[in-house]
Structures are given as structure tokens and as C-alpha cells.
Length: 355
Image (cartoon, rainbow, N blue to C red; front, side):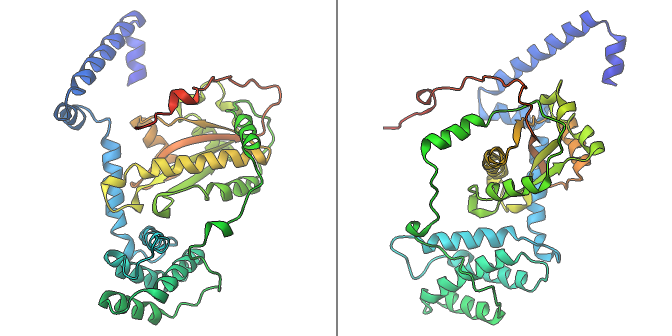
């Protein structure tokens, strides 16, 4: 329909209509910015701009509460969250003998449920088992809730791989020999590359880089995202046209990664921003790791445009509680390919010291 209108209406008139539309939208937005009530009215009634985020958040919460009935669930977001909450309590100074009662019973129930599933993630179970074992080794059993939870935990009879995944002292952690100057060189080496050779990207290298991506921090260690890798010709030709930032070079992209948020990892709308944050943290680790493996990359913005959301969701076969967060082109850089200088802000322009 849009293309038909463009053909029927003179270009000069189209330009005038477009400018008027933009001016009206700007005026309305400025009006809405005067108060929360006006913003709520504008974005809730007059505009559908945030409707997908609203729906994805609600669908995610609904899905979250259905997961207990899911027989094929490999990873359990609530188990991960509560295990992390418990291990944080184990690191407190001083360590308390009673804590975590609000979620301890739920954690043990989720652990028992996951342990009974043949396809559950064994590393996840071993981690939860290690944390619960340490907790119950010192927790005050005179507290009835702790005594009941311990009995249910032991009755589960889980036998892990004997590795200990409980909290450890900082001084025993793995130490890197990379100093600041070398790290800064890597950060400077990582630039947004848009011109790649036609050499196929080995999936094995992408998987190695993802090992580093998984080590990025994540709120309560839920890691609420997936990364969809597209390198087959037909799907790739369709996928590279979906972001707006690929015009003029999409034909040159040998592999596209799409970071997709999983909003079913949360039980409340207050956490709706976490998938964006956690996926972005992982994406930075991923890009730096790709550089060390000889691969270049270019993160591609994913603007909130409904038609593009629908197309990408269809292409990736996404569920209602998933949405794309960002795309990333990956490949071997053309040595003669141009790189934008992209002058960065100075540290003093970004830092604000609070007194």
C-alpha cells in the first residue's frame, strides 16, 4: 500500500506531507514530555510505539509461570536466579546462619523438579547442588523452614560430578596476564567492519567466542537471551535486509548473529530491561573474543519498528516472549576495506563524579 501511494502522489507533495507528519509528531512528543500523565495518554492510547514491548513483557511473564509444567525444559530461569541469590548470601560478611527463607523452599522444589528430568542442564544442576550443599552445611536447622528444605534436598538423592561450583575466594580466581595497555590495544583493534572477504566463517570459531560471551555478567545469572546464527544463503539474504543499518553493504555480510531477548526469564515487569542489558554485555565480550580469533564484526542497531519486528520474528520462528535486541555482522575483514574513524567522547565527557 505504501509503495502504491508513492507512485500515485507526486514526489513534491509526498515530501510536504512527510515534513508535516514529522513536525506534528515532534510537537506531540514535546507536549507528552511535559508530564507523566500526558506521556501515558500519548504512548498508551494515541501511539502504538511501545505496544510490542508491553505484549512481549506480558507474554514473558505468562510463560514464566507456565514453565513448571514444561517437561522438556533444559534450563530453568527461576532455579538460576534463586541459586545466585543464595550464593550471594554465602559471600556476605559476616555470613549469617539464617537467610534466604523467602525463596529457599522454591529453590529446593525447582532443583528436585529439574533433577528428575533427563534433559536438564547438568552443569546448572551441579551448580545448584554445590550451593545448596554449602548452605545446608552451616545453616541453622533450628529454623523450621531450613530444616524442612534440607530434608527435601537430601531426599532428592542427586549425585553430581563431584565438582564444586560453590563461591570461592577472590585470591583463588584465575588471573589474566593481560595488562591495561594490551587490553586497550584490543579495544582499539575492534572496530566496526563492514567489508568482508568471501571466506566462510567457521562455526567452531563462533562457538569458541561464545564461551567468552557467556562469562559476561548477568542479573541473577539468568542470561535471558539466545544468539541466532545465520550463515545459509537463503536465510542470510532475507535476514541482512531487516536491520536499517545495512543498506549498501548487506550483500557483503557472510554471517549474521541476532541477539534475541527471552522475556520468559522474569516474573515481574520491573525486570523488562534486563534482557537488553545482559545481551549487550555478552555481545561486547563476544566481539572482543572474535577479534582474538581473527574475525571482525559490526554491531547493528535494531530500532523498534513493528514491521521489521514481525519479519524477523517470522524468519527466526520466535515465540511471543522473544524479541530481537541487536544484530551483528561477522566475517574475515578485507584488509583494504575502509573503517570509519568514529571519534569517541573523552572520558571527562562521560564521567560524572557525585559528591
